[in-house]
Length: 244
Image 1 (cartoon, rainbow, N blue to C red):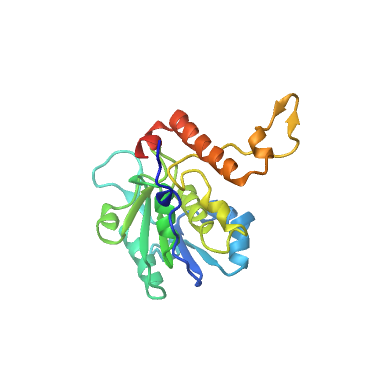
Image 2: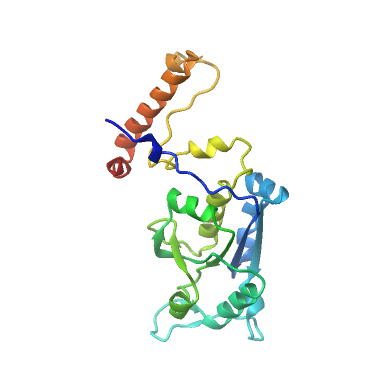
């Protein structure tokens, strides 16, 4: 099988400016933790990304800070109202210019590595977390630029989806990961699953690391890694393999 390796490692736009991600949610406490640890925390401390979480209730004119109401169509579940959402968007747009205004929804475009790559080249992103039964459809018709789903399943809200999107995007920003080639060799980066990886000891309970990885022959190791990536993709994710 002949593969054009030029398509396997997409080129990222090199950016020196920091990225800004704003997230609008009815449950800010649900999403704060992922951004205060590990790689995302270090990216913020380095000034490579700003992540701000905004409570939608702060933009409600209701004395009880309600942001939802019953659906005109009836049925179970509440719907987020358009007014507080537009108020929040207008407030943020008065301060920043957004490349994308994203709504997290189970029926949005399926999020994948290619989309993460594209978003990592943006400057400012605004994410609106779906919740309850959904949001007034006029938000989706008139106020956003993109709908994203992280999978064909339903969660109680879009907060975790927003965290997933942010994490996937931020780690691709130059400088976030100390070894930037690490991100380029991740699974899905080239529509292939990553090859197997091993570490010391070279033998454990009779289970041995493949000899090729101990050879020091870089060219042969890279060839083996590519073969393993193709083999694993064909076996585990045939739908990705077909794209090759």
